[in-house]
Amino acid sequence: MTSRGDAPGPVALRLEARDVPLGGLRAMQVRRALPHRALPTIGAWCFLDRFGPQRATMRVEPHPHIGLQTVTWPLEGEIRHRDTLGSDVVLRPGELNLMTAGAGIAHSEYSMGDSPTELDALQLWVALPDHARHVDPSFETHRTLPTVELAGRGGAGTATVILGTLAGVTSPATAHTPIVGAQITVPAGATLPLPLEPAWEHGVLVVDGTATVADASGALAMPDDGGVLYLGTGRESVAVGSPSGATVVVLGGEPLAERLVMWWNFVARDHDEIVAAWHDWNGRSARFGEVPGHGGVRIPAPPMPDVRLTPRSRRV
Ligand code: MN
Image (cartoon, rainbow, N blue to C red; front, top):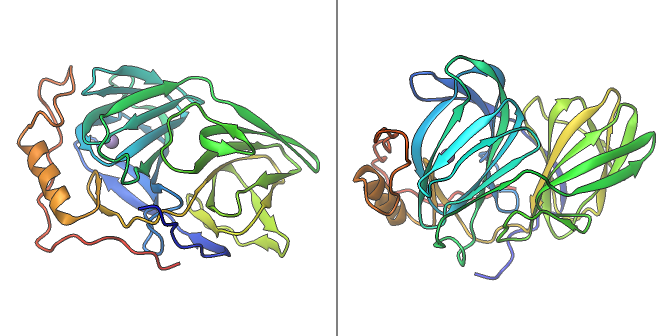
């Protein structure tokens, strides 16, 4: 598929986040903004969870993924990642874990130590396009990422380019579609120009402090905490301001033309691919393998629904 997705134009839509309990013995609460019932994807970004800030003992036991990349971006605390490729990495704020599931991988994510600790992180998924979704799995850690200075009124801020390209600066992390994910520090009292790619759609998430977003028409109404301000396409920039300082994340990319079937930890194109992944994981197939160090413990795929899974559609 080479055709572009829908281009909704310069909209301003509040995608409110919802609380989702993660299962397991030590249940954690997350705030989920994507997928949203109005919008399954922003560019190829298809999933956005924030866990924290909270005190928690994170024990996400081995579980599989297909057809996506996971982006782990800690805001506070440390996360240990292990996977079926043998990776074993401790990640800290400002560092990126990018796991490309492709045809299939499994991983675990733990906080450090055995007692509750301060944790806050973003967990995002990027849908792999059709030409890349069956690639061999891979895993990358990037401990330094490129930055862009955004000089504005009342001060200058810094954008860290996590994935893709912002203002001509490109992250070393592997991307398979035209995309951007960046974290921007807005100093108190500053208003910064945030450059956008007009052909792409974008969303803005405030992760710390209070921020305003404005375009030529004026200030745009912001979502509640944890929500995403969806901007659609067709803007060259917006102005991001903060009276007392803020950290915001911008997510964007070329609208994805492909319709995704998402279920549990799998991103596919039809029901039968999900069923195959379900059997391969619950049957302990070599497609996924074992994450070392867990003694065979894993999160089983839950029962599949009785209905056939269908693609999520855009309502924007
Ligand atoms: Mn995962």
